[in-house]
Length: 79
Image (cartoon, rainbow, N blue to C red; front, side, top):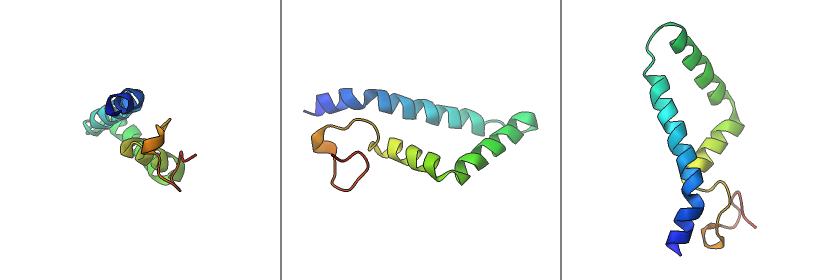
């Protein structure tokens, strides 16, 4: 049962891992046009409720196709 869940969530987990790696690289930019671009992009994300909610659902593992045992009533993705 858990192995199936792990396999179903693998692509979502890889996407979150790639996003977090990207954030780490972005935060490594300290000066110049790269820093300006990072600040603008993060400001846009901060102002976007939809993007922040999507990122939160991805990080919590409640986004995407979930097996029935992982669904909670009243949450995103519920049947």
